[in-house]
Length: 141
Image (cartoon, rainbow, N blue to C red):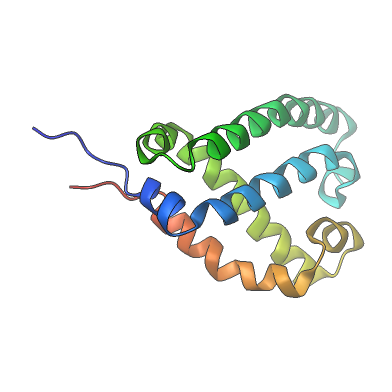
Protein backbone atom coordinates (compact mmCIF):
# COMPACT_ATOMS: atom_id res chain seq x y z
CA UNK A 1 0.00 0.00 0.00
CA UNK A 2 1.34 3.41 -0.96
CA UNK A 3 2.19 5.93 1.72
CA UNK A 4 0.01 9.04 1.85
CA UNK A 5 1.61 12.17 0.49
CA UNK A 6 1.10 15.49 2.22
CA UNK A 7 -0.51 17.71 -0.41
CA UNK A 8 -0.02 20.69 1.91
CA UNK A 9 3.67 20.62 0.96
CA UNK A 10 2.71 21.43 -2.63
CA UNK A 11 0.59 24.34 -1.39
CA UNK A 12 3.46 25.64 0.72
CA UNK A 13 6.14 25.25 -1.93
CA UNK A 14 4.50 25.70 -5.32
CA UNK A 15 1.45 27.81 -4.50
CA UNK A 16 3.23 30.31 -2.25
CA UNK A 17 1.48 29.14 0.90
CA UNK A 18 4.73 29.45 2.79
CA UNK A 19 4.31 33.27 2.68
CA UNK A 20 1.10 33.30 4.76
CA UNK A 21 2.43 30.59 7.07
CA UNK A 22 5.63 32.56 7.71
CA UNK A 23 3.63 35.76 8.19
CA UNK A 24 1.33 33.96 10.64
CA UNK A 25 4.26 32.48 12.54
CA UNK A 26 5.85 35.94 12.84
CA UNK A 27 2.53 37.29 14.12
CA UNK A 28 2.21 34.37 16.55
CA UNK A 29 5.70 35.13 17.91
CA UNK A 30 4.80 38.81 18.35
CA UNK A 31 1.53 37.85 20.05
CA UNK A 32 3.26 35.52 22.50
CA UNK A 33 5.96 38.05 23.32
CA UNK A 34 3.35 40.71 24.13
CA UNK A 35 0.82 38.42 25.77
CA UNK A 36 1.20 40.18 29.12
CA UNK A 37 -0.36 43.30 27.55
CA UNK A 38 -3.28 41.38 26.06
CA UNK A 39 -6.65 42.68 27.27
CA UNK A 40 -7.82 39.07 27.60
CA UNK A 41 -4.98 38.28 29.97
CA UNK A 42 -5.39 41.46 31.98
CA UNK A 43 -8.95 40.38 32.74
CA UNK A 44 -7.87 36.98 34.04
CA UNK A 45 -6.57 36.00 37.43
CA UNK A 46 -2.95 36.95 38.14
CA UNK A 47 -1.86 33.34 38.74
CA UNK A 48 -3.32 32.20 35.42
CA UNK A 49 -1.57 35.09 33.64
CA UNK A 50 1.79 34.02 35.02
CA UNK A 51 1.39 30.43 33.84
CA UNK A 52 0.20 31.54 30.40
CA UNK A 53 3.11 33.95 30.05
CA UNK A 54 5.59 31.18 30.95
CA UNK A 55 4.06 28.85 28.35
CA UNK A 56 4.20 31.61 25.74
CA UNK A 57 7.92 32.12 26.32
CA UNK A 58 8.51 28.38 25.93
CA UNK A 59 6.71 28.42 22.57
CA UNK A 60 8.72 31.26 21.00
CA UNK A 61 11.84 29.09 20.36
CA UNK A 62 9.59 26.50 18.67
CA UNK A 63 8.36 29.24 16.30
CA UNK A 64 11.95 30.15 15.45
CA UNK A 65 12.74 26.49 14.79
CA UNK A 66 9.73 26.02 12.49
CA UNK A 67 10.46 29.24 10.58
CA UNK A 68 14.00 28.03 9.97
CA UNK A 69 12.74 24.62 8.82
CA UNK A 70 10.42 26.28 6.29
CA UNK A 71 13.12 28.58 4.97
CA UNK A 72 15.62 25.74 4.50
CA UNK A 73 13.03 23.40 2.96
CA UNK A 74 11.32 25.77 0.54
CA UNK A 75 13.28 24.65 -2.52
CA UNK A 76 12.98 20.92 -1.88
CA UNK A 77 9.58 19.20 -2.03
CA UNK A 78 10.93 16.17 -0.15
CA UNK A 79 12.14 18.38 2.69
CA UNK A 80 8.76 20.13 2.66
CA UNK A 81 7.08 16.75 3.11
CA UNK A 82 8.93 16.42 6.42
CA UNK A 83 7.08 19.49 7.70
CA UNK A 84 3.80 17.55 7.81
CA UNK A 85 4.36 16.90 11.51
CA UNK A 86 4.08 20.69 12.04
CA UNK A 87 0.51 20.95 10.69
CA UNK A 88 -1.05 21.60 14.09
CA UNK A 89 1.55 24.29 14.80
CA UNK A 90 0.83 25.95 11.44
CA UNK A 91 -2.87 25.85 12.29
CA UNK A 92 -2.30 27.53 15.67
CA UNK A 93 -0.32 30.35 14.06
CA UNK A 94 -2.83 30.84 11.24
CA UNK A 95 -5.81 30.82 13.61
CA UNK A 96 -4.07 33.22 16.00
CA UNK A 97 -3.40 35.68 13.18
CA UNK A 98 -6.96 35.34 11.85
CA UNK A 99 -8.44 35.81 15.32
CA UNK A 100 -6.35 38.89 16.04
CA UNK A 101 -7.30 40.45 12.69
CA UNK A 102 -10.94 39.85 13.61
CA UNK A 103 -10.46 41.39 17.07
CA UNK A 104 -8.66 44.41 15.60
CA UNK A 105 -11.52 44.96 13.13
CA UNK A 106 -14.41 44.30 15.50
CA UNK A 107 -13.17 45.74 18.78
CA UNK A 108 -10.72 48.36 17.57
CA UNK A 109 -8.77 47.69 20.77
CA UNK A 110 -5.39 49.38 20.57
CA UNK A 111 -3.53 46.20 21.53
CA UNK A 112 -4.93 44.21 18.60
CA UNK A 113 -4.70 47.08 16.12
CA UNK A 114 -1.01 47.58 16.99
CA UNK A 115 -0.37 43.84 16.96
CA UNK A 116 -1.86 43.37 13.49
CA UNK A 117 -0.28 46.51 12.08
CA UNK A 118 -1.58 47.41 8.63
CA UNK A 119 -5.22 46.44 9.06
CA UNK A 120 -6.10 46.94 5.39
CA UNK A 121 -3.38 44.49 4.33
CA UNK A 122 -4.32 42.10 7.13
CA UNK A 123 -7.96 42.06 5.98
CA UNK A 124 -6.71 40.81 2.61
CA UNK A 125 -4.97 37.95 4.41
CA UNK A 126 -8.23 36.51 5.79
CA UNK A 127 -9.14 34.58 2.62
CA UNK A 128 -5.55 33.41 2.18
CA UNK A 129 -5.58 32.15 5.78
CA UNK A 130 -8.83 30.24 5.16
CA UNK A 131 -7.32 28.64 2.05
CA UNK A 132 -4.12 27.78 3.93
CA UNK A 133 -6.04 26.20 6.82
CA UNK A 134 -7.87 23.99 4.33
CA UNK A 135 -4.91 23.07 2.13
CA UNK A 136 -2.31 22.33 4.80
CA UNK A 137 -4.50 19.46 6.06
CA UNK A 138 -4.74 17.71 2.68
CA UNK A 139 -3.17 14.30 2.09
CA UNK A 140 -3.36 12.08 -1.00
CA UNK A 141 -5.75 9.14 -0.94
